Length: 255
Image (cartoon, rainbow, N blue to C red):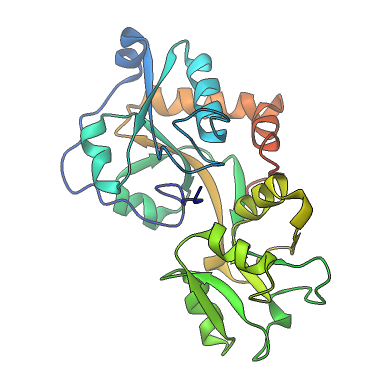
């Protein structure tokens, strides 16, 4: 199975047309909260449901906090979100510029992530600063990491999916893979015999680090407050950490 990036993390969704707002009262009256997710994107989400993915599990937890059930709206491309009629997306980049482009309203962030280097356990690489003209790095095509690493004159090999670069790394075809800690952690969980070492993110490069939040589609103020409150409660009682932990992911607090 290919690991597909979630629909908003790492990419901007263009909502060019009007999207019908759903108030908190309307959501509670209908009894459902709609979550847009990709059906084949573990560890994020999976229509097959075994496992469901942390976006589905967190969506269910948020729905319970709001006193409703979760409806899954499966979408493949960014353009389907308008017709799907969902209320939220998860793992959205909590960035003002991205917020302006997508027209999503962003909740308070619930974790921090970005681009890290995954390396073989035997590698001597310790950080991005150790990359040089002799280290080949796997990057996703068109990614910010590809651009930044390329500017440093470090040889790169491009891949369509993070899982492809991690497979290449485990097969010793490249020296490192620039991937999200989420992808690398899930790879280690599902490939214990090929576990990779995940280096700390380089916070000095702003474009390779970001906070993550809930993206809401035209919410009213009451909906925003309800989601913020639910996220805060789920963070404090450890629910969010436990959900992501089931997929091998250790969350870092937002900044």
